[in-house]
Length: 186
Image (cartoon, rainbow, N blue to C red):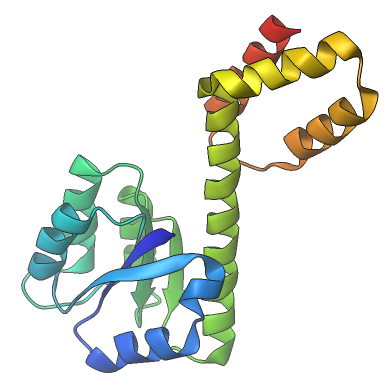
């Protein structure tokens, strides 16, 4: 399960997201919910979430400052801004702090569907990254490939390379490393 933290000073936004998104079916667990940036930063350091869905305008510490501080210590967290602001300067801030997605409020069924699609794709990317990491680090996976190579099992390699090529991962370096590992094995 991937860990999610919701951050919004409007309690109803969190209630809405919890109620309208089937978190378990998507492979997520809400591990924290904060109502301002200061609280969110502390909770993020404690829970180490994979995804942070945050408002921009909040008391204490706004979403952009939260994002900046999060990026200093947790570079792999996926950050989604929820904002009622549609101006260019807000979009620039999102780019500056490497926000992964940006969804405009108010939250409605269409935007919940968009957010669900983003989360589903992210969960798939994490699963694929785990597949590549297993291939790279697991000696049993290497032994399995060598075993099938020695006996010349074509069906195994057809299925293996089909899965290998269908896995989309945002990290090209991981795929490159996996390719070099396969070349070395072969």
